[in-house]
Amino acid sequence: MLALIWYGLCTVMIIPAIFIAVRLRYAFTHFTIKNFVSEPSMLRDMPSVSVCIPARNEMHAMTECLERVIASTYPKLEIIVLDDGSADNTSVLIKSFAHAGVRFVEGSKLPDGWLGKNHALQGLLDEASGHYILFMDVDTRIKPDTIEQLVSYAKQENATMLSVLPRREDGWRASIVFATLRYYWELILHKASKPAVASSAWMIGRHALRDELGGFEPIKTAIQPEAVLARELTVNDAYRFLMSSSMLGLAYEKKWQSQVETSVRLLYPVLGGSILSSIVATLVMTILALPFFVLLSGFIVGWSMVQLCALLELCVFASLYASYLRRVWLRMWWLGALLWPVILIQEIVVLAMSTWRHLRGNVTWKGRPVTTKQTTS
Image (cartoon, rainbow, N blue to C red; front, side, top):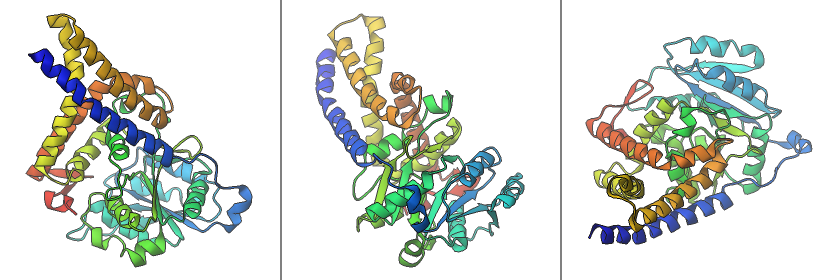
């Protein structure tokens, strides 16, 4: 009887496998820059760009981030870093780059009703003067020609906003191998009403953000303000999402613990802040993880066609994950694919943590509380 149930599940699991394969194929086709879109002779006609970086207790990552931005070959560039009430020496570190043209902005007191980062982004918007604003996290790394490629692509596509899924280009680390599935789901679940978005680096027209969209005031409680903006601009086909590559040269280095904290903060609200949605998502991921446990059962009850089917199912989903990893990891992607069931189990645990902590109202963001009410924006 159990064998019949498992064979039925194997048949049903063909559907999500086909769905994931189709969605990944779409992403790989539509979210990739295939050729350089700018030439050195074009730079003099490029619009100005303000690189805006919000920082809060970021001593560990700030230096390399700023060094990479300063090394940019883009000619019309201003660099602004806002220290959002850091308790360490982040402000001192930022000021030490003043000789290289980095402008320090001291964040103001957080008003009631604002999320901390959203208020920092508004402060940066108020200070910026560029035609485009490139908002970056401090764990983002760029190459000298990254900005010119982003601007050229935005102009070519007539896009008001674009965001970039960053790559991992550093060496072997647990933070790479055991990375959460945040961006994997972004690609798979992308649709017009909820477009894929990346918070590590996103660029938007300053006038459009300030004058047409009202800045961050209307979305001051949104956990993913960039997602709300992307959704609004998608209506007019003014938003683009890109996967980074060696050509585009946008990467990030984020610790495993930070990735988990980000997923805990985002997963429940991204699912609509609904217990039912969380339960459904958990059931789906549990079903995807079943082949691993069925395969392990072979060591206890013996091997049969049931375990063979489980192995085939496991290889299918691991291969799909591998196709994604090959594009977002510079190296060691195959190890991540081998750990697919472990990563999936980790994601189930992280979703449970996200749901539980949001329901209890004890989710924090850089030491500040994020309430369940705020996540629904």
